[in-house]
Image 1 (cartoon, rainbow, N blue to C red):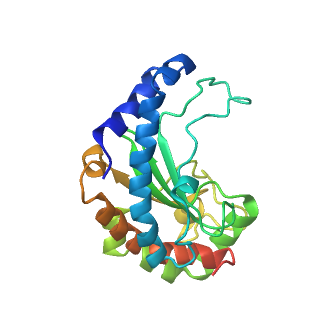
Image 2: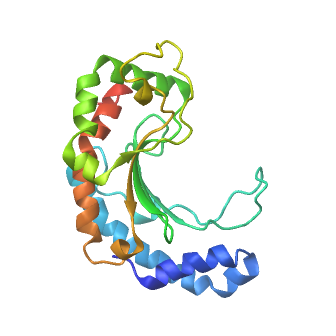
Length: 221
């Protein structure tokens, strides 16, 4: 579980997103980080037991993403993110392996697992694997346990069939996806509950076949 103060701080960051305010409240940021490290340290061995490709000796500090935004090429010049991002990287931070990402933001928290907007060569491999092994993929995403917890992201979905596929392909809606991310939406009260580690562990067990399918698709089995 995390503390209410941790959620309160990131909510306040969104409302007072400037360096002077942040400097005055730096102690709250450090307290929130310590709280998040506690959650991460509990999740690391659970994930490592489920997915041996994730190193059990991963430091919690490596998982918690920076709160500072890179504003160099952004029209939005707010210096801080309005959320906490936690990423559990397999085989280092890379773009060719599915990722585990925990997003904590009041009213908008979620666990996302898979590929978000992968590069074209990776996306092509995933689509080919779904086309070649449709039954296996459908068995995974139609599993009642999967459907009870996760939904597939429809973000930036193609309007037309991707190159190489007919519009009447039986799984064309799956092949139109540009991200292959399974989303588990989390309510604030769930994050504040002592059972959150158990809930996330259950979700990670359920999503493992999805991860293995994607990993096999891109040649990281």
